[in-house]
Structure formats: structure tokens, C-alpha cells
Length: 194
Image (cartoon, rainbow, N blue to C red; front, side, top):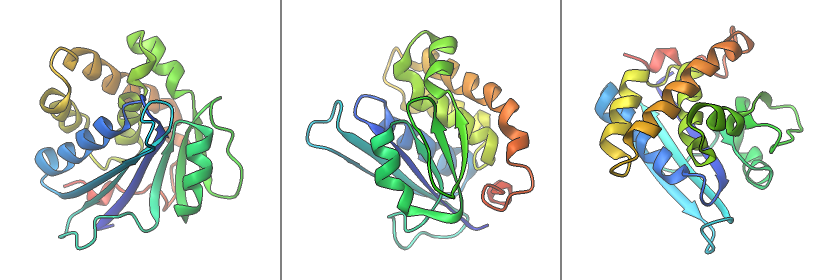
């Protein structure tokens, strides 16, 4: 696969915009790929819907908006309902349970992302970075080392350590879910990895 389209969605205050920037940096700087990222959020940023869209590609990107996502990370039910129609039929959803109650026929991996954030860092606001660790492990679109380097570069000063811990914790937690994805074309993104 030359191109991977990803939507990170949730509500304001969950760190999705920062997560999108970190993932884009990990792909572009760490992996030498092309990356484009756009973001949107409701006028009431904290508590309103928020999303970060990324395209990661081995070739130049001519249009930066996600057309049909290969992967949707949903951290809130409202975000899931808003974005599920933008996921490819053979795509996959990584849903934060129990906050998200998936429905429909798109393949969904239910993972307690917020609980993992709480256990790993003691802070639920690190949920989006935990999700990046899980996404990196399940898709191999970026390596953990590229992700951690991007956290060091992009995380607000003084939060680098907790964000590295969140990314690593998510990556480790994803191990138990990896077998759910084996053999699926939806998340077989390893060919993007150099």
C-alpha cells in the first residue's frame, strides 16, 4: 500500500490535534515518508468534536484531506457516529470502550484506551498518545522509535516523559490485540514501512 488514510477523532481536550502532529512527524521525519495532516474542531474546543486527519504515503500527496479512511480511531461516541461513514468497507475502527459503542459492518477492534492511559500514566488526557502507540503497533505505519522521537520533538515542554510513557504503554498493550488483525487487508499496512 502506497497511501494510508487515518482519522483520529474524539472530543476537544483529548489531545487529538497534538497526536496528529506527532504521527505526521513520526512518518515524515522518522520514516522518510510523505505526510499531510489537517485538523478540525468545534467552536467550543473543549468538549466539542475534534479530529485530526492524516495521510501517510510513500509517494507525493496531491490532496491532503482523507477521502476514505483505512483506519478510524474513535475516542467518543459522537465522533464515531460522525466519522464512521468516511471509513472504507475494508477499513478498521479502533474504538475506545466503553465510551464508544460500535455498530455496523466495519471491522472494529474494541480497546479500553482511556483505561490503558489511566493505568500507564495516571492521566486520562494521554489517551490520544496511547492510541498512537496502539496504532503504530497494529498497523506498523510508523515504528515505535520514530513515534517516541516525534514525541520528544513535538510534545509541550515538560510533558515529554509522560507522553513517551503513554506511547510505549499503548504499543505494549496492543500486543494482546494484534492477533485480531492478522490476515486482514484492512490493516495490512506494513508495506508502507521502509
